[in-house]
Image (cartoon, helix red, strand yellow):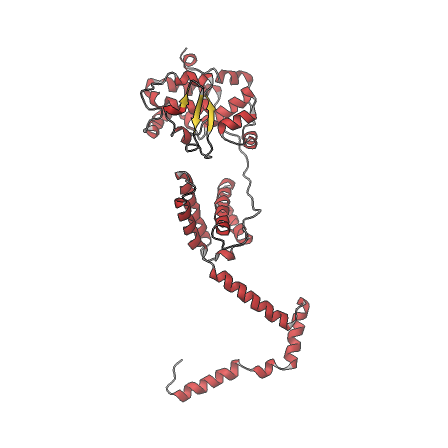
Length: 344
C-alpha cells in the first residue's frame, strides 16, 4: 500500500487501529461470559486457556528451534563414516548412506521434534503400498531407529524415540540348501584343475560355514592344521567378535590339496567365481554353502549350541532358520565328501 502524503498514512493507520484493536469489546462482561461458556465443556477457564495457548506457543517455538530431519540425517551419515570409536564394514556404511538419504527424502519438511510414531507408521504404510517387502521395510525401520536413537542419545535433540515399540516381522522362508547330488557336483567342479585357485574359498564355505565376506579376508596364517581350526579374528568377523571354526576331517582333506605357495584366497576371487558359476551355477546361489553346512551339521551332529558358536550366530537364530533336517544317509554322505571320494 502506497501513500502520497503523511496525512493519508495517518488516516489509514487510524482506520486499521479501529478495525483490529477494540479493547472496549474485550472488557464487556457478555464477551467474557460467552468465552466461559465455550470453554466450559473442556473444563477450562479463560485464564487457563490463555496459559495453555502460551505454553503451546512456547513448546512450538522450542520445536522450531530443532534442526530439520534432512540436516540431521546428513550429519548422522557423516558421523557413522568418521566415528573413531567404531569402524564399520563398507557394506554397512553403504546401507547407512542409502537408508539415510531415503529417510531424508521421506521426511523433508519435519523438524526432528515433529517426528512422531504416527509419522513413522505413515511412511512404512507408504512403503508397503509401493511394493516394498517386509524384509526391506524391516531394514528401513532398523536404520530409522538407529538414526532416531542417535538423535536422542548423541545429539540430545529429542527425549523419546518415536520408533519405540514398532516392529515388522518378515515371514520366515526355508533356507536354500544344496541337495546331496548338488554337493557332489560342487565338489567335482572344485577338483577341476582350472578351478584350483578358488577351491579354498568354496571348500571353506561349504565345509566350515564361514561367511563369504569373512572367507575373502582369510590367509594361510589363519589356517591352523595342528590345532585343527580356522581363526576368524574380530577384524574379519561380521559381528566384530572373533571365533575359532573347527577344521573337520572332510575340510582338512580339501585343504591338503591346496598349494601353500599360492595365496589362500586370490585377489581375483570375483572373476574366478564367475568362471566357477558357468560350470556349477548351484554353488553360487545366495548363502547356499553356509546354509548347507549348517543344515547338514545340525542333521548329523545334533548340537545347536556348538553350531551357533561355529557360525557366529545366537542359538535362537539357529533354531529359527535351520529346523529342516536332512535324512541320516545324506548327512553322513556330506561329511564324507572328500576329494578322493569325489574322484573315485
